[in-house]
Length: 180
Image (cartoon, rainbow, N blue to C red; front, side, top):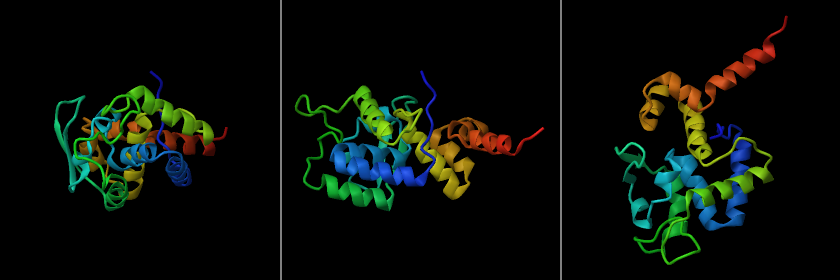
């Protein structure tokens, strides 16, 4: 498995939002859901319309088996409202075009992100990029590594900082200043 990176550049995040908005309502929703919740793709793809109609997304994480409550941010709530108002509560948010009410698979989500990454010349992008992008920008805005560690269920702050690429940023800056 390849190591993926967060999307660090806010302008690229905004560009990708616009790209997905123009491309597909479903794909736009997938992107904004990932970067606004920090959920793993396996948990995102199982969401149904009824799961996102209240103030929190409440789910049992597939990987850990732990119950999780994720507050829906005001900006995500606005976007969700536009995209789900007329949809049935039992409908998957990220419906496949195949079958009546089946979600897209992880490989389709990967293909969607890879196509966009190609358009924006981004490297090391995968489905986990959405979660890491959330983490990176959450940390940049709050500097609260303990809270982010809790959100991600990591065992230490060091793991969280490495996971979101902050350690890499620091090493890159140090190397740019280094001379001998």
